Image (cartoon, rainbow over the protein chains, first blue to last red):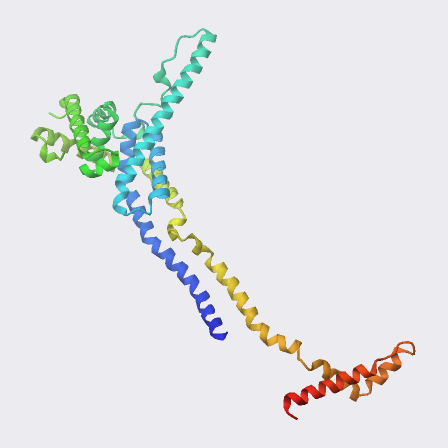
Length: 208
Length: 140
């Protein structure tokens, strides 16, 4: 009985140490995760900003993507985080664009109804979309070339823009880009090549 | 498609756009960087608790379970020590013996009054029986 009690006492005394050990074992991964997020956040913001053309929406999209990655995929191997994060970010951007579109339609309908009652004319639906004008960050970057590039990127089809930014800004290789976009490597090459052609056609004057 | 696969003009275009985009990301205004930092910390705070323990969430209950087991063990260890003191097999007989030797039984009879008869035979049996049992145990 005494040996049992000794064994039990030893076990109980070891438990806090075991818990501490478990916590400490997760700390390196937490640090790695923080380091990863710190490394991608600026580029992620720029990618979201170019797609959404809105500073606050871009910040919200990046924050949402960070949160989803941490909550759902932080246990995945670190080498999977980058393509996963950009895939999540693209979904967040798409969700935000969809919400904007719905909000714009509802507001258009609402204002049209009010306008009819007040005898006013129709409202331009584009006015209801979130402010497409460059935000403070864009103004701070007051660079004609950069603004022209952003405008050209914003006009690209979403998949072409995504392929171009992931390859050119984030520096993902074709395989990682394919993983992030959820498509084949061949599709990535096609989207990227077409994006490059469209941008060169549009921006040629800025680059000669 | 890598830049090596592009014609030189396209590769140069890609290189220049990459440099421009990279610079724009590096030169974000302070308020944007601050917001991103706060977003990062907020996200890290939401790191799922199970991830710290993997699928072994039950381990979080180990300390409580171990504490309960320890309390139970202490009770079990103490029980054999207190039990015999409470229930000595001859304690009742010894008590009666002590009472008989001191004449307390006679005193008790007086105190009980005339109407309440005392079963002396029973007490005698109890005292002598207890002595006999003790003698048999010790071999005396």
